[in-house]
Image 1 (cartoon, rainbow, N blue to C red):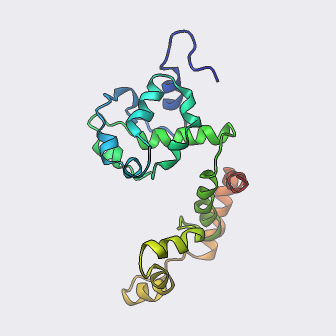
Image 2: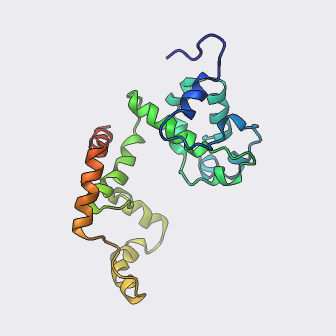
Length: 192
């Protein structure tokens, strides 16, 4: 992929900004490279992911950033967005970069993990923790599996009712997700 057309390094930033997933007020071009995003990023604390560096590469037209393993270490927590003094959203930029990577067939072993979240939308109509993480969560959070198995009872005791949604609603959600090709995208991600 050619990084620049002529001498315009901002062409790639323009591509990000014009992406359907980009909010109107993303703030990419206002980034002052202060590093506030990186200072609060949980992904940066536990890996080599650096939201400030990722945004800098986008602004410099370095499209090779979509090949970076590090873009998959963003948690989408929007903490970066909440502290940015100019209203930039590295998290949103990262989401677009990941989508470009998937669309271009640039994948790694981290992509398949996300399919589990999509599977839950198709199965139960809402986002949920994929079952593949249950044992790891139980290792990290003592008693998590017990809590998970007793969740319905706990919710009833609190008067919250079931967490599941009606079957008819799940069917309606599936119709919508299939109309926009969500099921095909998840099927593709599951194949990675």
